[in-house]
Length: 84
Image (cartoon, rainbow, N blue to C red; front, side, top):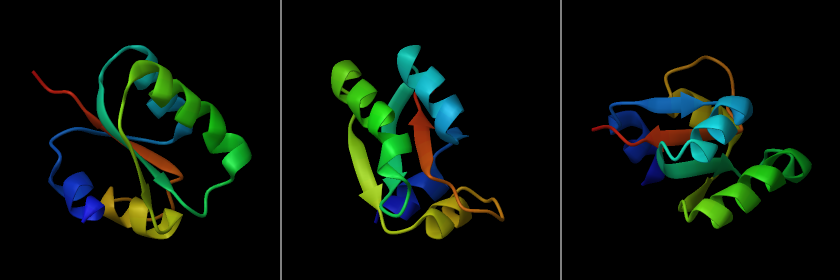
């Protein structure tokens, strides 16, 4: 399950702006997007991930994604960072 991947990752980037920046910098292994997040907001990230060939996985809800990231609020996006 994708939530387990997020929970077990050593470094996770949470939130739209931070995830976009990290993808542009080539620092992301995989991106997670909540299905209930606004597509108008997440569309740019999906396009960027396609351009940079970063796999995107959709998860059920912002609330569950936030919980998997260890935060009390929902998260529209999260990314597992490449760690050297």
